[in-house]
Amino acid sequence: MKKNVLRVEGISVSYGPIQALDDVSIEVDEGEIVSLVGANGAGKTSLLRAIMGLQKVHTGRIVFMGNDITNTSTDKVAGSGIGLIPEGHLVFSTMTVLENLQVGGYHYPQEVSSSLESVFESFPVLYKRRNQIAGTLSGGEQQMLSIGRTLMSKPKLLMADEPSLGLAPKVISEIFNILRDLNEKGYPILLAEQNAKKALEFGDHAYVMETGRVLFQGPAKELMGNPKVRHAYLGGNV
Ligand SMILES: Nc1ncnc2c1ncn2[C@@H]1O[C@H](COP(=O)(O)OP(=O)(O)OP(=O)(O)O)[C@@H](O)[C@H]1O
Ligand SMILES: [Mg+2]
Image 1 (cartoon, helix red, strand yellow):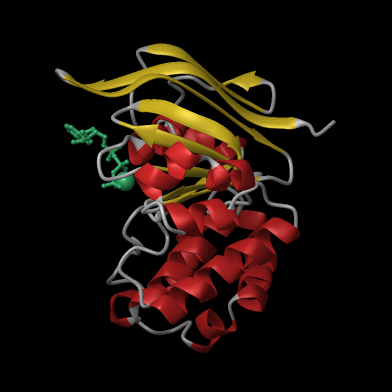
Image 2 (tube, rainbow, N blue to C red):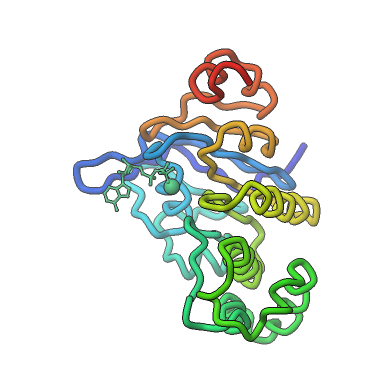
């Protein structure tokens, strides 16, 4: 049996009067790609932010590699091995590529150079552009930098929030290939993705969310064949 990496047990999150998550439970096992599918406002980002300690959890528990990390500071969550690639390929736009990566490695100052080497191996374009100001990179390159910066924190679980947002189809395929390679190197991945077809093709397991709740869950291939999911999320004709 596969070992469990992350277990979210019945969490709720609110922004004032707005309940963004209501009794949400998900699991990620080692080696797995888990997709969170759902339209705008479904609660995908809120869930990833709650796991990362960026959003207060009102009820429920988050357990990472056997430790309760509910409402732990983001710094500690990152230190314990969860890396979030945030929505909107955020990079420090006035810093160089190299400086962005160095910031990502601050938890492990002794290992920055070996981590840099492995990030540059995965992303040769970042090596080529290491002295370029990050804000002048293309959207796809910024997304690669965002992934690379997260890898610098030596995560044991990678969470990616809509990494394909705003990118051209060819670049989207490239980003998904990179994530697939990282998964094959051993990183479990929790992916939030609006494009249900992409998310279900990419994931081993998936959760379909709507207005803060999990509506469907199961092996991604099974969900792809579920008539209700097809009708509501895949246009019924995929
Ligand atoms: N800072 C905030 N203040 C108030 N409400 C918020 C805040 N952030 C999110 N919400 C609300 O919480 C709900 C869930 O939003 P969330 O961003 O988690 O959805 P999402 O699934 O990531 O959507 P998208 O695909 O558009 O990124 C929405 O109704 C949203 O309006
Ligand atoms: Mg979001």
